[in-house]
Length: 620
Image (tube, helix red, strand yellow):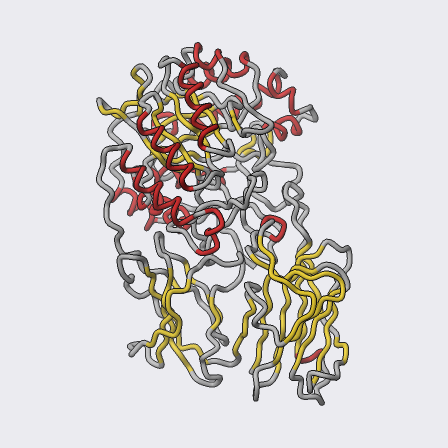
């Protein structure tokens, strides 16, 4: 099970920051309808990073708390990725607020009215310090309209009031202002700079997709400006277009109010034609009175995105656009994933430089295009892709099943093995990616010999070349091997009935991209590798039933089967903001089968709907 670690300011990190971070020379300012960095026009095409300062995607199979604080590795990976893709601005999501549906052990930023979690805010300190070091400007929304990560409904919950009272109730407004005052006046524990004095911040945003009345928007804008006269302020009113239920334009108060500097709008129309049409109407509505930007957009095809980006670049009334959304590497291996359940097709968060699982929404092509346009809008040449940095191989023992911390920009990895720490090294797996079901080891070496000792290392690859090798882990004395069925096809099964591979609806399966799906009476058979003895098998299944719905059988000859006992663990979460099914892990160990028999086959059978995302078979 993955453990989250609260971010702390290490001496090494502080020394690195003091050495490398020169910071920005200027605050971003406004002149007419343009943003300026000093006397130069400031424009951007970059990304929303909704989990920059918070983790809502800890989707490990055995994890019951999806929330946490990012590690320094994860934040550095994020900012390195933003630099690689040409990003010079990033929009966070919001300041997280305690949600009554969150697991009790979860960490948030605002734990109650005027009650703030210092350890969580240290993570925000690190975010700002690294953004300063990597030269990325930040847009920071102050509250969420929705319950995701906690926001308006949760401030109301603190006082046992209705979420719509947030806009008018004096106590709720006062509570929110306490958060604003705390955030703007906070002194960063890494840099020593007050947030309101930090040039890294491009703008404060009142919130994400707010449904506020004009009076509230004006009051909050003026309150922020009364504390912080350095930074720009952006209105977060729900100016969104999705071509279906919602088509709401920016409000006149946002255009007229002097305390509001930037106007933002969100676009999720089903085509670039509709999106550009609404953008043109918005440009005409604002009429050059203030800078205008696209705060969020996406969920259209690659060529549609190109049309929108070309329009943004050519329309000087638009200072920039931020696509939804980018996710980083996970410090336990692989990436964080996020499915967008409201999109018309399967869209997931982007991972640079794009991978096979993202082909359904054109991930590689979209990211390549977006990178080129990100430099074009700034009149810069697109830099060459450089070799990735070395990954970090994570510790393991007994069986060669392991993960590594990925390298920003790597498209694949070579797994290398040797009998000596000094080599020679053999490549035992070439160009495998690290986009896999969250929470599991990325690789299992079945070509090793039980009883032998080996050393392992990993190299990252991209179109430029290989990285230097990772750290070396070893010697590892191989006591048993692990065969893994990744549920990407049915070829790991000796035979099956009623099973199929399904993709999509990843959120319900905690972001597993593919799974073995079967209805009642579906079954599958695994064969124990020849001349080796069975040690343990683990089946990771998602179910909607109240009770376990898989049974298991063993056989010596593959014809005559006997039902066997198993252990089952359930990892149901109290979190109900998403439609998670129940994760159940079935474990059949050698001690649970007849020791007088030479088990050769293991069969599973469903008594209800099953969705198996992974099977691990250990043998020795």
